[in-house]
Amino acid sequence: SPWKRKDAGRRWAMFGRYAFEKYRETRHEPDLHAAVDAGRKAVAATPSGSAARAPRLATLSTCLCLRYMLTQKRADLDEAERLAAEAVARAPVHNPDDRASCLIALAEVQSARFERSGQVRELEEALETDRRAVACYPPGNPGRAGAGVELAMHLVRLYEVTGTAAALDEARAVTAETVALTDEGSAEHHVALAFQAMVRWRVYERTGQPESLQTAAEE
Image 1 (tube, rainbow, N blue to C red):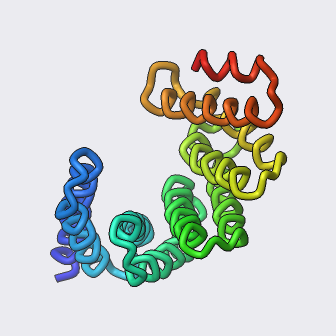
Image 2: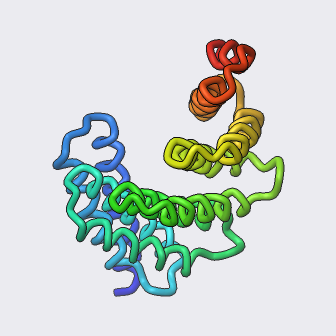
């Protein structure tokens, strides 16, 4: 029945999240395979018109992208890209959390494609997708922090590849906002501080300004 199918989708999605978190903790490859398998079953059991379909597509895409980075199997990356694009197309505009998570999943795939091909254009596409994810929230909204970390990471990568100072300047602004938007003492705040310190270190390497080095060492 439709009810049983909907319930099955929720159960498989929960199991997939559990397997994925277990893999992140243990780095045991079979857990990642289990997360992919559960994610596929969750998507298959979720009706096309369900609001849950977009985030489940995005979660499966993220798992496949991570498995690609582990195994370098092109098929996983291709599937991840297709699923992430569908997730973004289906993500409701009125739900910024789901829409941002779908865009972040797509940016991860675009970044992985850049690492495979070396084509800077693909990294720039990831950056534009990250910016769209940040823009899902109004200025001052804490939801911008998670997408901001992803954006800063890809901006630093662009700087490393091209030496573009503007990318590093944008990363400084993004990490400053991310730190300000997270609660002091929270795990998110510590992650934001770590990225801010990394960006400031890169600034010191570029400019030699001692104040940048000193501030980074304090983070």
